[in-house]
Image (cartoon, rainbow, N blue to C red; front, side, top):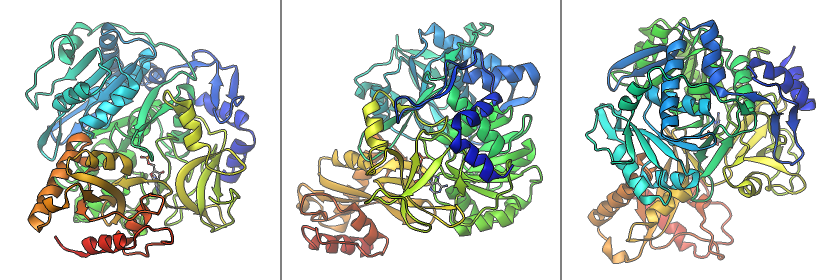
Length: 631
Ligand code: AMP
């Protein structure tokens, strides 16, 4: 079948199409209805069906391939490497699940996971899935305030964490940040389960904190049966940034997600049971959920969990892993490839990479130079894929298992099956013609695997995502894009204030709020500025309550360092702006709206755009001035 025909089936008759795909997973009880769209824009998939993500990822493979590798945990930070077979993973997940049950976790309860890239993090996610608890993984690079916001929204009964992670050979303590976060949060989790790696001295809080190793020893043989869940029950909440300072909890179901992942593993990632998949992301991001933990395991593949950087001990490390574990499919982000490009390609050539069939890149725009370089060095297809935390799996790519659709440089590809993608004129709400720029939108119902709602806030789900266009209720991706005559899409940046730093999605509002908490800061604007390595970096412009306090370059430098330290402490180094400039005033419209786009344009050496509504043109001159200065 041609891909065009496959795609058309998915759009014209989604129920029949997904009914077929649903056979890729095991169901405990068949569903009565494939799709319920009685309350648009909400979509319910596989209504009445009962299944379980952990069962599909682990148990069903224990039956057919118990001794095959399932989870390969590699840390180049602690120099440890351990392979868990499906049978061993099954055991470990049950032990973790038994611990959770002993701590009072019940079906539907939230469990917050704040962990480095260690096997226990995957055990914890799968254990939640097994007992019907809802996990909310928070990226380990986030600091106490980010964590506190998420604790207050998710209201977890349990937090699973570790003493520390490690990066670049240095321990990165988690426990003190977690202690601070719980202190800051209004909601207090009943228990904190700590995996003590012996990396950072810490004390357990009596009555609250419990030691994983001690509890595991008590549950070595405790069987924990799978809890069968209705397809539309919640599997997890994953927070992501938007235009407000308050992160949105992307809520996902069970059955739809399992089917969507199984289908994507087959059609897009072309993975086969018994092979090895290596996604270099982190469990704190959506790629980690979909393509480190659930997707590969649901497909019966071994998955690699990697703690470390791409260049330590040298830039050959990832390729040595590919050789050793005969990785067939690899998933990374353009930034990582740009980092590797700075190192001698011989480090890659040293290894036998003949097992590798394709490299998938996502999370940020893939520039042509990076794409061509890595394609030449590796000699395998480089497949861009565009998607979001909200969708859980690719919106745009090529489905090579259906048809060998050629890729096009600069384009993430064509619309994936299930996604009725439209380019919409922002002003008129009309569909754009070929090569005409508009907002990338999706006509509902969204396919299985996409977010069900914003956790605890259906209204926010509708008003944020589904109320952006005149005439029709369409889902907005908040990305600009164009579609060419042949159906290839090109992504042209965000329509909102979300920025993308090294593939990490950050909200400028959150960074602004953090900077504003510094006592000297009066007002601040944060914008994303193009960067050769990271795609974008955050740059801040602030006004001071007492401008006289920082007039000399030394005073400004000292204040800049202080502001950065505030962001580090509250949000984490991942959100730290690359520069903080101090100005006398910020450019605003006469109605008081910050002209972030104009500031961004100036930083990137572009025209500042339409300034007819600007309150005071001097404000822009000041921005130009400070950006032009070398400090
Ligand atoms: P996240 O939710 O963190 O996955 O970030 C999603 C956003 O990252 C999208 O809305 C895009 O702005 C950007 N993005 C993700 N993948 C791609 C890609 N392949 N090409 C261009 N932009 C991308």
